[in-house]
Structures are given as C-alpha cells and as structure tokens.
Image 1: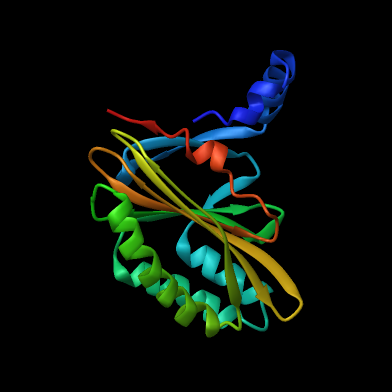
Image 2: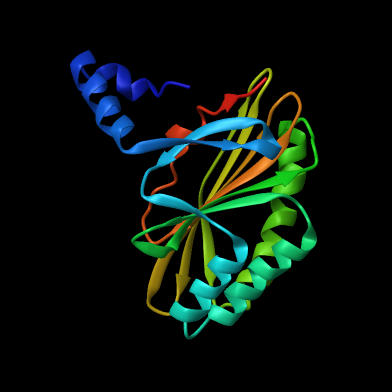
Length: 196
C-alpha cells in the first residue's frame, strides 16, 4: 500500500529513501507462516531461553514477570520466533503462529476489545498503563492486516508496542514489535512475501 504523501515527494527523494533503508535490512523467513519479511539488520534471532536469561539479568524490577510471560508463551505451544535488537534488549520483534482465519471488519470489532482486556490484565501485573494510539485494518483480497499500536507507560518509562495480525490465504500469524522507540516498521510488515 502506497501512502499518498509519498506522491508529493520527488521520485529521486523516494528512491534515495528506500535505497538507504534497504541497506539496513535483512530478509528473514518465517517458516510456520510461510512468509519472508525484511527486518532491520540490528535484530538477531534468539531462542526463548536465551531471551528469558537476558531479561532476568538486565531488568531487576520487572524481569521475573516479563520472563514469566515468555515462559508462558513457550509452554502454550504455538510456534514463534524472536528477534532482539543487539543494542537494546527491550527492543523486540517476534512472530507467533495462529489459527487460520480470514480477517473481516466484523471479526476485528469483536476481537480487539477482548484482546485489550487480556492486555490490561497482563500489563497491569508489570505496572504498565497503555493507551491505543493507532489502529488500522487493511482488508485485502488474499492478505488482510490488522495493526494495533499502544503507548506504554510504567513509572517514568515510556515505550511502545505494536501488534500486527496478518492473515494470508493459508496462514494467520502475529507480529509484535516492542521497544522504547516509536518505531513500528509498518512499511516492512505490509510488504511480506508469501512463499509458495
């Protein structure tokens, strides 16, 4: 999807913008979702146990609760892949498998409030307050994408969490981006490549 604002910028500027960003990206294959996607090179794949250990070493206040959340995900059984920013462990991108469903606006209206009830419960245990700052639904013919972005506050810390629910003709999966920067990589996740 092309944002109309880009049309107002000269073609040379657009080409320069994309070529600069492209040099900072790498392509990763998400096998369970049968897709490829570009992510920033500064993210490396980590195993859940490694991430849990890093969280416990670096987050002395809420580390145990954060680690417990990843332990719970690991025990729940869906396939997932985690990428962590090499410079800041708080910046994560992770992909999680889901049950296949075609996303519709009716389903989104039903699902979002229930998700936010779960987030309220999970995040309040970590002292996090959240406010939704963006939501978009792109109802494509073969691929649908739901984006939910939240601003997170905990004591004097500010962070962001963006959740994408992506449904292709054969798979549904989630992409979660969290960190201290207001970066959600929408331009990358809206351009997933489906593997045949």
